[in-house]
Amino acid sequence: MALLIRGGQVLAGTPAALTRADVLIEGDRIAAVGPGLAAPAGAQVIDAAGHLVLPGMGNAHTHAASHLARGRAGNWTLEDLLTHSAANYGFRTPEDEYLSAAIGAIEMLKTGCTAAYDLYMAVPAITDEAFEAVVRAYTDVGIRVVLAPAVADVVFYQTVPGLTDHLPADLRRTVADMQPAPTKGLLGLTERAIRRWHGGAGGRVRVGVAPTIPNQATDEFLDGCTALAREYGVGVHTHLAESRVQTVESHRRWGKSIVARLADHGLLGPGFVGAHSIWLTDDDLRLLADAGAAVAHNPGSNLRLGCGIAPVREMLDRGVAVGLGTDGSVCADNQNLFEALRIASVISTVRFPHETARWLDADTVWGLATAGTARVLGQADDLGAIAPRRKADVVLLRADSLFLRPLADPVKALVYAETGAAVDTVVVDGRVVVERGRVTTVDEARIHARAQEAADRQRGQSAQAWALAERLAPYVAAACRSAVTAPLPIDRFAAGRPGA
Image 1 (cartoon, one colour):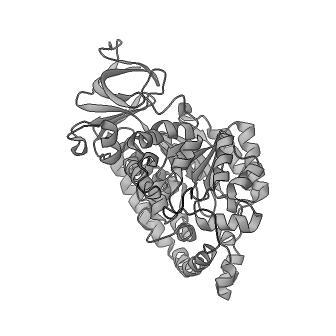
Image 2 (tube, rainbow, N blue to C red):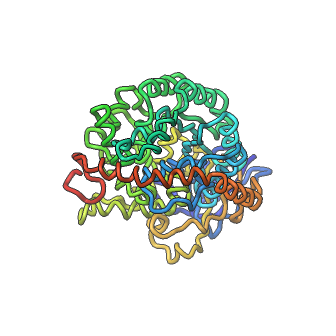
Image 3 (cartoon, rainbow, N blue to C red):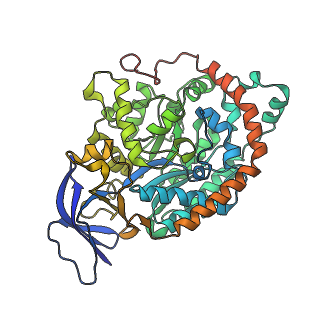
């Protein structure tokens, strides 16, 4: 079926600019862009007068499981977040996982995001049924996704330097008794997910490989992930050097950086995506660039968890592809890429005081959320722009948005001012999935009501796990404070010295 979006102001080109034009969609692709296009017989026509017509943005890094735990994080570091994983993600049914994924997908669509790279995690372990439920949620809501089971075969507490020395005897025994999922079982789960779901929902669902945190992966597991990615031609996505603690631990255990270790196991390549990528040296950036790897930048989460400021300018200067992400709702608090756009730009100024040429300007940041994330998703030729032969993922934003009036430079207005509240219509794969601000594919109200019930029940059932996390947290924090005193040649907490 054909769809004609008529009379809007289309944001297209490089640099992006507004032009009065129509967009003709045939099937799942854009057929033509230009003024006065004729509507084919039987075509659906959308009157876009009074609207900006934008390419759908892409969320380069999120977690379906996290949305049900929104609002539970306090002043937490990344290690605090991981300490509370069992309390936040445990005691769930597959239906709970469906609801968590669905509310995140709804939020993304309603704020102009049409595609996401999702590292789905579960406690104590991902099951085939739970993964299927997340696939079903994304399929039902209608958003495009690369979904990867994020798994680890090393217990988190074993990766915190010196933690055992800080723990009292009873907690030391508790931690020692924790066992990870078996390596072969995790690789088997990932392979089944790829074989069953990769290319599903008419190609809107793809599956990736995700050793969730390299420090929580044995050499055997990393080698297995490399083998799966090569055999099936899928991408690899991991949390890369997100915290200083992780970087210190990698040097302590393996005598090398996290990036160097991944390179040794053959994981770096054009399909590799490193989320966060904060504590990287020049040598790390060179390895990523030479491999054709990509980075998912999550500025809101990086700040929320006190992880630091990623060296995005250096990545771009070296030719590393960078996409923009939110991270999960438990630590980033929302799935709104408009917020991420603004944070990505303004936080870049801190690293280069008075060196405005090195700041991430509005055009650059808009590119991260569109073409950049399209590259992260492995779909650079299909997504991220309104142009003939591209996939028909399009957003109509009301031009009378409070944050766009008066309108001078549209990209600056979108990056620095717009909130996403003015998103009116969203098309994914040529199908209208949001109309007049309401998702058309599912019953939003019912899903949110059920999600609230699930969150309330899970919170009650996880009380004991929460109490254990609260007991462990001070000791984890003490071990981390000790670990981060180890010297590193880079500083990602502030401006630092030149090149840091």
